[in-house]
Length: 308
Image (cartoon, rainbow, N blue to C red; front, side, top):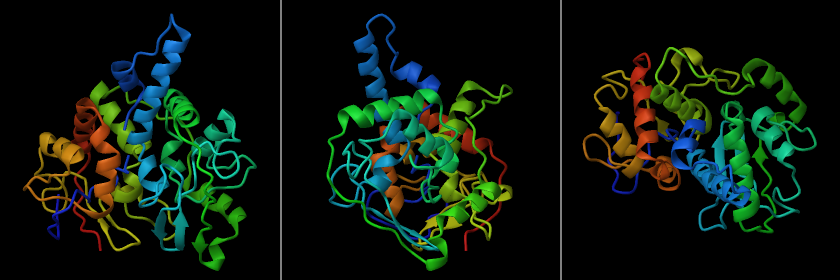
């Protein structure tokens, strides 16, 4: 990976191996066996696994403001169209998701629509979350509803350019760029590879930050993982195995260590938004999950590309 500036703080740039970010159904089986004999034990284990999904999915990073209450929203998210603010996802009934049903929650993640059918802006990465397994979605819902303290914090309105405020136009954007559907494992690849693909493409939504965008705001799929300039000026670097502009000189252990501790191959620290992703997300992953992400990334086609 290419680090353009040396930082002395916690980690930042693979922002989405993030964001970043993360576990799949098979990981649930390895980490938390869902009980079959004792219904309460099974529910407790599902809730515990839901916290793992929360961390793997990068939810804390976007839904908790600096010095704010846990998951109560308010964190600014820069974009070319203005500033979005992460919403309150605590179980507060007035300002959070306490009045939602599990079906409403699934609709948000799988279809990018609110309980009343309004389209969500793709700053909320439902384009990746649509691939989540039912097990992960249901476990996350169980955790949010049972273990998170409700916070009566009103959501901060987005500050967007005028032409973006007409939400019905998002149906056109979705027609162009959104393909709903659960992740499908590749039978020709190993279990580890498929796990890494799921964590990277779906739950961890790494490619949402590390892939250049087209003029209409969709992912440039011909340059998947090749790095992109973020709206706030940060660079989400090239995470393909290109030896000059990507992570081709990194071994699997370097990638796994970075996701756990934020230490780069040459001993530097990443910083900025990736620091949050690691602190609140990827550092919570199992070693097997981090190795799976590394295995998947190393299998990608190398793309020579330095983000502008």
